[in-house]
Length: 147
Image 1 (cartoon, rainbow, N blue to C red):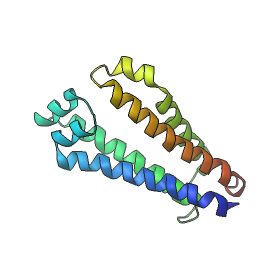
Image 2: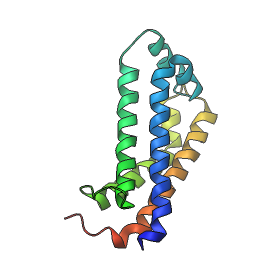
Image 3: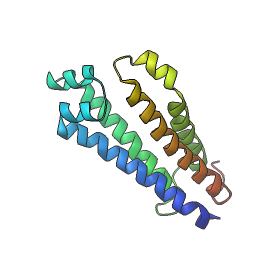
Image 4: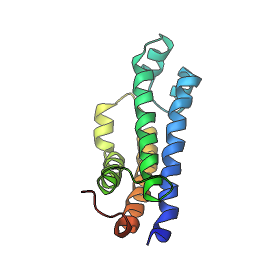
């Protein structure tokens, strides 16, 4: 069963690494990179002022995405089994799908973001979540129990 899931798990892990690297590139690239990826003008201005918070938030997100890659690669049996593997894969899928579906919340919470950015990121994150969810579904029988 893992042979069917492996390409999906590798895709999920690869997307996680790509997203993590993109976040790290924003830190290196500075305000123009934050603007390019649509982080919003207040964030870009904070980076210009030398505020530490945008960098810390971006590092945190990059770290979480890196951990998600480790879980996908662990499920694909490229790495040793990580703790709570099944639970983590379900949680990662849920977080991504909920974020993808949260367009009205994003519009209310971040009115500084353009509607096109909100819709594009929702579509991207939903696709990413569907890949993680399908990988989890296909790998489920071979993942064993968490406890």
